[in-house]
Image (cartoon, rainbow, N blue to C red; front, side):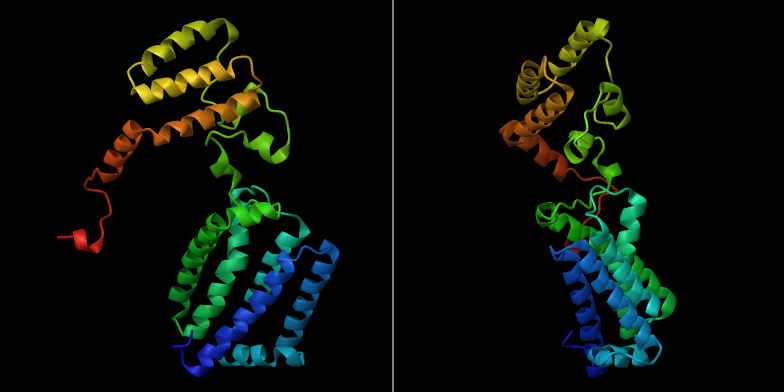
Length: 273
């Protein structure tokens, strides 16, 4: 931000200070009601600022609002986003909730920023919308471990389904039946007890056409999961599936896949002709 002209630089510092303050409230481990009260005070202070009676500590922010016509709704959206973290720890939200969260805590900041940068309104709103979401999703992936330590998981539940983990069991602590696992895409199909041997023979024939590493992994998995509860089976399938990734044959095949090129693959600038 140091390369910006003075007025723009100071405005961006004021926006950052506001965001830092409310974000610290959201991440504070203190009582939820106390933190909601602090956010409510910030709403009152922003309202006062837009009525022309800014608290002394917001004099710099008031100047930025006046100079760059920053909109009240964007400041309030940021506070609302922080309150989503305060009311309850977010854990595997649906896509609609995650999108709302991203709009409030990231895109709203972008909308404030593009006004300071002087962008044309329509183009600026599009940039804030797309870049804000991209940055927030990147931030979510980067901070998975830190968020987990606070009891939060921002990955959408729709994306978690079908990746080989018993999401319902792990996140909600609920038992999961075979039918529910199928509905959540944690398993590909449910085989009736009377068809188990026939199905197993069919799968075995297909497995034998794969690399030895895959066969060994399947063998280990089958031997381990027989007779175990469904949630244990799902965990072990995931474990043994990933255990093959260090095998040289699998690594070589993976590298071949990554290096394979086709007409639709994006190339770097140096690779374009």
